Image 1 (cartoon, one colour):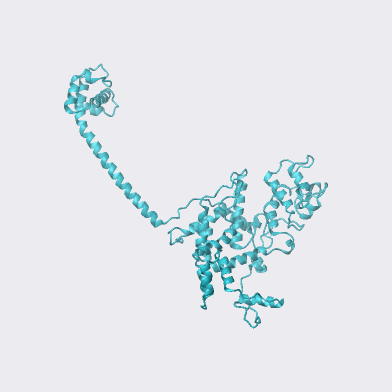
Image 2 (cartoon, rainbow, N blue to C red):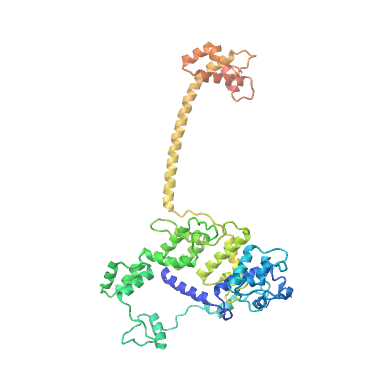
Amino acid sequence: MTFDGIFFRRLAALGLACAASPSGLAAAEPAGIEFFENHIRPLLVQNCYKCHSQKAGKAKGDLQLDTRAGLLKGGEVGPAIVPGNPKASLLIQAVSYDNGDLQMPPKTKLPQASIDKLIQWVAMGAPDPRDGKTADITDKDAFDIAERKSEHWAWQPVRRDIQPPSVESVGGVDWANTAVDRFILAKLQAAELSPSVRATRRTLLRRLHFDLIGLPPTPEEVEAFVNDTSQNAYETLVERLLASPHFGERWGQHWLDLVRFAETRGHEADYPIPEAYRYRNYVVRALNADVPYDNFVVEHIAGDLVESPRIDPATRCNESAQGAGFWHLGEATHSPVDIRGDECNRVHNQIDVYSKAFLGLTVGCARCHDHKFDAISTRDYYALAGYLQSSGYHLKDVSDPVAQDSAYNKLAGLRADSEAGLLNEFASSVQTKVSRLADYLPIAAEIVRNIPEGRDASKPGDYTTLHPTVQKAANGKNLQPAKLAAWIGYLGKARGNAGDPLRDVVHVALGQP
C-alpha cells in the first residue's frame, strides 16, 4: 500500500490507541495521568516511599504517599494535598521548606525543578491513577506478553469480516456512494436523521482544496471544475491535487505535529536546532513521492544505516539518512545542572515520541512500572532506552555521491597540476643555485686557506676590505660579495669544528685529507 493510504489509517489507529484507557481512569485526563507517571510517581518513589508507603512497612506521621487516598487523607497534621490549590497543600509547603516545623525530605531539600513539578501537578488537580493498592514491581515475574496480546482489543489483528449494512435510498436517491457512506447512513436512519444534501460542485471543490493542499481554488479552477461534464471529473480533480507539491506541505504538517517537530529546543534560551529544516523538507518530499510507509518507518529509525539508500531524483541527495534526523528533534536543556538526569529525560522524550508515532502506544509509562494494560514491560522500555543511549549524534554528508566524486576528482587533478608546477619551479630554482655554488666555493675556500691559524675563520669580517682579491674575484665572476662573505664564514666555522656537516666539504675545498 502506498504511503498516503496507510498514513491516514495510521492516524486513525493512533487516535484509537490513545483513546484507550482502563475504566478506572475515566475521570482523569490522559495528559494528567501521563504527567503523573512521568514526573510525580518517580519523584515520590525516590524521595518519599522509604518512610511513607506500604512497601516500607511504615507510615511516619501516619502519612502514606503511595496511594491517592493516602494523599487526600493525609497524616497527623492534615491532608497532604488540596487538589487545585498548591498553596494550601501541606505537601507543597513541606517540600518548599516554607514551614520551619514541616520540611521534607528532612535532610536535603528537593531540587527546585522537582518542586515545580509537584506544584504543577497539584494545580492540575493532582491526577493520580493509583487505586490504593501497591505492588512490588521490581521482583515479580514478567507478565505473559502473548496473553496480554490475546486479551486486549488493541492488539487484535485487523479483520474485514464486517460487511456494510443495507440501507434505504434517501428521497428516491442512492445517497451512499461508498461502503463508508453506507455505515454512516445506517446510523443516521437508525436515529431517524436525514443526511446532508449533496454538496454543490463549488462546495466540493473548495472542500477538496482545503483538505488536500490547504489552499483555496483560483477562480479559473472553480470555473473549470463546474463546467467539466466528464464522468471522471471528481477523480481527475483528486489526482491533480494529490500530485500537487502543496499536498506534501499540507499533510506533512500533521506528521510533523505527531513527531513534535520544532526548529528550536523550546527551553528558556530557545536556541535553534541546526539543519532542522532538512527533516521538515524530507517529510514533505516523502509524502509527495508516495514513499511506502514501511520504507518511511525504516528511514526514521535507522535511515543512516540503510545499505541502499533512497536517492532524491532531483538533487541526487541521500533521502534515507535525513529521515533519521527525527531522533535529534526534541526537548532539551541547553545547560542542565543534572547532566545524567537530562540525558535520561531526552531519551524518554525520544521513546515517547517514537512509540506514539509508530506504535500507537504509550511506552513511556513503562519507565517506572510495567504498563498497566499494554504488553509493555519496564524491561522493554530500558532495552529501547539502552539502544538510544548508546547511539550518538554525528553529521552525515547527504549530498550527491556522484557529484562529490566528480568534485573530488577535479580537486585532485588541480592539486596534482599545482604540485607539479611547484616542483618544477623549485627544481629549476635549486638547479640555478647549485650551478652558482661552484663559482662561490673555490674563492671562499681560497680565502679561508689564507686566514692565519690563530684567527677565528668563522668571523671573517669585511673581506671586501681586508682582501681586495675577494672583491676583484667577485666582480670578475659576477658574484655577490655578501654571499661570498657568508660562504667564507660557513667554511671557516666548519674548519675548526669536527661535527659540522660542512667539515667534509671544507676538507675537499682546502685539499686536506
